[in-house]
Length: 176
Image (cartoon, rainbow, N blue to C red):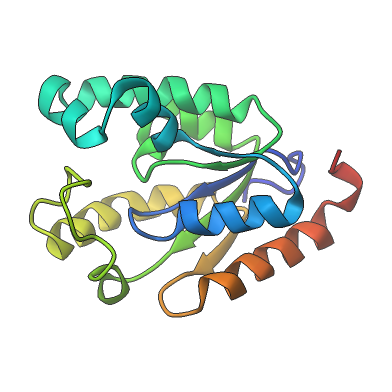
């Protein structure tokens, strides 16, 4: 499992779309007094909405932008939230093997209310697309994880508190 000899920061959140990486990452970063870097938000700030990038340039182009954002984010002592598909790149997988990786996972029932709207171009068919993509990516998420948290039903505040507790127990000497 990754992360045992890895420096504590960056503390990287991975997991399927709508698992709470950004929402929980924000709370954890605030509690730890660390910056949060959300790679999807950085891409949107620089290039526009992800759905428009997909429509205009295609998924392959988006993945190039995503990889650049990931490399930049992982070079920072921060809490980092990666887009669900960022782990697909072999370079990102290699980079994450040197990081502390928090895998947030959930189930289709919990995701159903979280994926409304046009913001997620890979989920045109809703939960069935989500489940198919998650099933494909799950082995990669699991292989990269230092620790895992189920976000299906527990309150975001409690999950974030548990992650902060884990960080404080596992990295006191490694924090700046």
